[in-house]
Amino acid sequence: MRKWRLPALEEGRLQAAGKALFPLCFVLSSTLNLVFFYLGLAFEDNFIQKGGFILGSLLLAACCGLALLCVLQKRLLSPWSLLLLGAVLAFYGVCFAVCFARFGFRPSLVRYFTQFAAFSLPAFFAGIYAAARGGGRAFFPVLESASFAAFPGALIYMNSTVFNCLPWGYGANLGILNYMGLAYTFLPYLLAHVIQFVDGADWTVPFTGKAVRRPQLVRGVFIAVYWMALIASATRGAYVCVVFFCLLLPAARLLTRSGRAKRACLVCAAMVGLLLFNMFVYAPPGLYRVSRMNLFLDALKQGHLMTTSQEDNAASRIDDLVRADGGQQIINLPGTAEPGTTEPGTTEPGTTEPVDIASEGLKVRNRGTLFKLAIREFLKSPLTGMGPGGFTVKYGMYPHTVLLELLCETGLAGTLPLLALLLLALCKMVSISKSGGGENLEIQNLLLFFLVYALQANISGTLWQCSALLAALGYALALPMPPKKLSSK
Image 1 (spheres, rainbow, N blue to C red):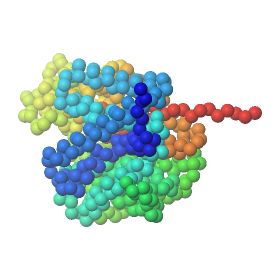
Image 2: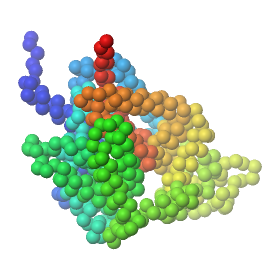
Image 3: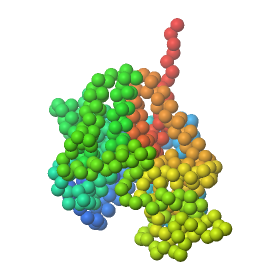
């Protein structure tokens, strides 16, 4: 019986659509909320917005799963790549199994697992498909095309914030979309536009196939709007990520001599200059929240990591908190209980455990305290850690840095294998980017993009919801190595 096959044209379209899944994993879900905002459905919580968000995310996840099945069916992966990719899945599978066996099905842990399954795992699958099908070249053009959907939201947010007329969240949010979520929605679009601007790439209007007239001028407008909207959000982690990128891109162009180094230096210097001008010289009245960065910098000068001006009453109790039992949440509890008879910071005579520390209503306000707690918890159990999810169970909050979360929750037993996979993925991408050929610049650009997200993951990310980490691992570990060139004698 003859096997039915798609016509070549339809199969080509399906492959193009499959390659678009990888970049969309970074932006689709968050951009959906902006689309609902345009429709007037994201001003308050409502069923249509929530249902539409869930449906869109599940549809993307299903497409990513089908894309992976296509790769496996056509046997496009080498045995070595399959082994490494299987090791990534085994790591997370073992971690979640240990997590639920040790701490039970707590709501916070179940939320980690469902978000991992809905967002991180599909991104992993999409990365594998893009690598096996040569989708790296389509990554930034797809992001540029998708940016048309988010651009009105960035323009609205920029204008409303600059003129101080946003009615939600003290002039910080856009309806139910908070300032941090907006910043990290705009971030990948901004990075894509800068890379395409530096490389002078072509640009087509979505769904029409028509070329954008004067693409560099249009890109300049998009870069300015997205960057000003991001500055207006006053999201310090996003500031650091963009500045880091503005240092990486010119350096990469200069070191690899891949061209456009002068243009990269100029556009990146202009972006950093605009941020510094708003921070230290002049900012419109609506950008008063930019001063949050000054608080952070002033504290750094004094040797402190301070991310809020609110009192952090847990900072002085780190020793007692680390000694306390990890089977229950002892910090960041809702409300503040009445203090007991024992004074805060004291223990019963002859004991080493703090007395009912959970009743003291302690709360972590600063990232520095979270980092110290994570380091102390790792030193307490350096081999196996607290158990996956253990920091959240004990403190009601994740450490806000993937590396310290990995160390304190899985110990060296979990940290070393995952770091080995990440190092292998990094070396593979660097090797391919130096090998020459038509796609070496695309691999280099993707590597810079992933490095920015690596920084973001260690500023405010959590290991169990880090879609960018899984996407990068899936793509890098599935990349086929270029054939070695035969030397001519």
